[in-house]
Length: 328
Image (cartoon, rainbow, N blue to C red; front, top):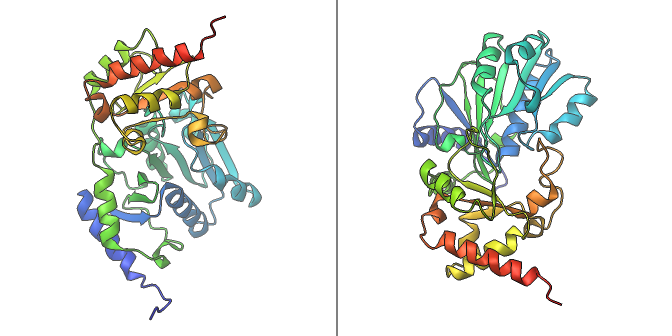
C-alpha cells in the first residue's frame, strides 16, 4: 500500500550524510537538489521571496545557461536587474560598487560547462560581494571536482554532479528557507551512489592534455590559446573541415569501443549528435560559430591515456576527408 505523503526529514538527513561524504566541516551546510537548474532556481527564488524587500539582483552572463529562465520572473516583478557580460567585466570592484544597496544576490559561474574555461574574476567578485553583504551565488560545473574553495559567509557554491544531482554548499550567513525540495522523494543510498559515480574518472593532467592538443595541431585547431585559464580535465580541439560526431564514431570503432563507452569519455557540440540547434546558442559568449560547434571535440584524460587514440583519431580524420572529396 502506498501512502502519498513525503517525510521532509529524509531530505535533512540526506543533506547531513552528503556533507560528511563530501568532507565538509562546520559551520558549512549543504542542500541537495535534482540537478543544477533546480538548485539555481530554488536558491535564487527562495532568496527573492525570503528577502522580498531587496528588489535588485545581478547576473554575469555569457558563462552558463542555467539561470536564463529565471529572468522573466524578475522583470515581471519589476526588479532592478543588473546584467554584465563576463567579457566586459574588467574592473570587478567598480562594477560591484555600482550595484544598488538593496541588491539581494549576484549569480556567476566559476567555469564553462563545455570547454572548462576558468574565469579569473571569480574570487575577487566573491570577496567584494561578501564585503557588501550581498549573496554570491557561484555556479561550478566541474571545478569543484578538482578545486576546494574557502566559503565566505555570504557565498553559496552550486556544484553540479550529474544531470540529476547538484549540491549547494552554503556559507554560514545564508539562511533562506528551501521552497519545495524537502517535499520531494529522496533515496539516500541512490543519491550517495550517484555522487560517488560522478567522481569516477575525474582527473587533471595538464601535460597529457597539452601534448595531445599539440600533436594534432596540423589537422585541428586548439580551442584555447596558450596561457588561457582552464581546467586540464579535457582536451578541446576544433576540426573545421569534418563533422566531430562522424569523426568520433569512426575513432570509437577503430578502438573497439561501443558508442556508449566512447561517448562516456569524449563528447562534442556537433548539432547532429544532439539533434538540436539551440543548446549552445544565446548564452555562450563569445558565441561560437556553427563551424566550430560542428567540429568541436572534447576528450577526457581517460581516453587520452589510450595509446592508440591519437593515431585512430588521425586515421579517421583522413578517411573522412577522402569520403568527402569528389574525384571527377
